[in-house]
Length: 173
Image (cartoon, rainbow, N blue to C red; front, side, top):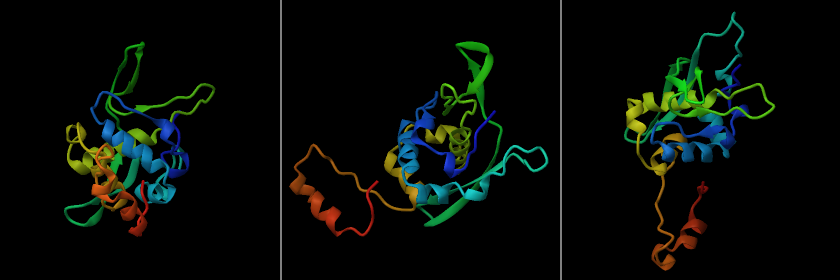
């Protein structure tokens, strides 16, 4: 049985990197789960109606910000997920890329992580397109904001970090 892909079910604890080298993406998605307002925009609340056979259509809707075109892009994906045999239980299959977390004592596995990863791969063109990257890229795509990399090992006076934070009207994730 799968859980809801909607924002109310999203938690950073649901995410575990799979075989794809997208730790930067996973970390950004974990940060997004802590920002419910932004998360509800990326994963629209009316996105999921349950697994009732009479209403379930297998399509899921997500939004990402295209920085180059300066606009939000709607991405729709189906519920078909690339899977591989589970090495610990070869008769069972598990998602090949981002893993679904099953918690002890809970019968529900969260389905939203693999769906949003599939949508993000479609947004950038392919799963291979999210192999290796920068968290700042994913955060910009998730929030429509911008990022600045600050080397915390460098002399903080050089960046005037605290002055910058005090002047900004935006929040820091």
